[in-house]
Image (cartoon, rainbow, N blue to C red; front, side, top):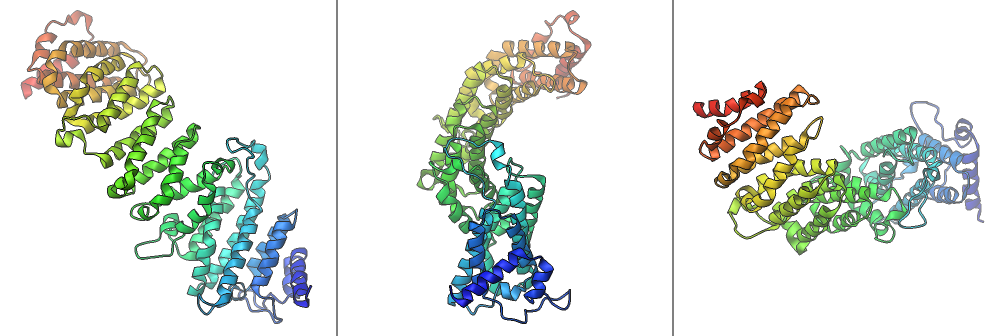
Length: 520
């Protein structure tokens, strides 16, 4: 070992073994003034040499807690001009050396708090496996925050490019540990949030979206570097081994909006489809959220290119056969936006041929008719008004299946909010407005259903006054629309109702049909 290398090792050993104040005094790193840092009076080794030794120690030392604390104090006490020496230009060989040294040291530091990997690609670890992670993650976050503080203090354009080089792994580390997960604690989440704030402040970024995508005609963004780190791990064979990987990717994707997402679409779409295709509902839901974000933030022309939109449609349509209410809710919402990319809504061009809108609505009605699970009934009922409104007058194609669904769902209560019945009344009113010429032949069955609903609601003691009022107003509005669509046939039929079997509330609702008609 050369004399210079021996000096480096001795310097490092002194650093990790001694308390901060004596260390700074002995190495002449402290200044005579508490408010101003000065260069030491004796020559210090180049920062690249020290970073190399730090990397080796961080990798080889078994107990790293004290070592990480010493690294933090080093960053806090050192002169920024020593940590980030001036460089002439990007062609200077020292630039590549400095960038490589910082990247390697930061990777080694982050590795001290790395999450354990699952041996099987489809398995999951017990929470006890992450027991030691929060403490180490908090220490690493504090050390990196101290390092970024020197960037903020030093400033200068010469350090901006170096910050862009090391920002992606720091960003991913912060994202991993400010999540409320089994590998985090309140202290580690707080430290990670402070690290994120320090990173944004060091580079002058407003928020994570600005950090990732920058602005127009601006290259100060790190999304490409982040994807360079994530993509090799986001393969079908390996992405499940690290529990944080899906969170890192999804959180990153959801920060990037139009128009910055489109250039990265070829790199963002495959991992999103990978999550979407997973057998676990929580992963599938995460994938659907990612796909929906892509649909909302990518121009339609880019989605139609290379048949991407059709691939998305097929990947989402398959989920309509699942029994997971949470998955179906997300899928129906995403499909509603994706269908506008694939085709015009049937109501806009009066097309006579069946389209994908019809396929989705037909399948939804088929499943609704036989569904008995309350959670799924609520999901379907919530989405149905949007699809009926979208297809417009083309709902006439689906009346034979839609009306049995309406009648069946209006007959079954959904206490205490009665959200299903309220949504079905909304669908019924939309259907009468859109397909009013077809209502004459269906007047009798619809009128019986609405009268039965009014009687049931008025006599149900379990309903709150507000919910009862909403149901009765919705029923009255449906009766008035039905009466208008059938040229007052409803009024003539209501004359046959035996008022002795109706409560005053029901009679009051029925009276509005005649009153409203007279006023019109």
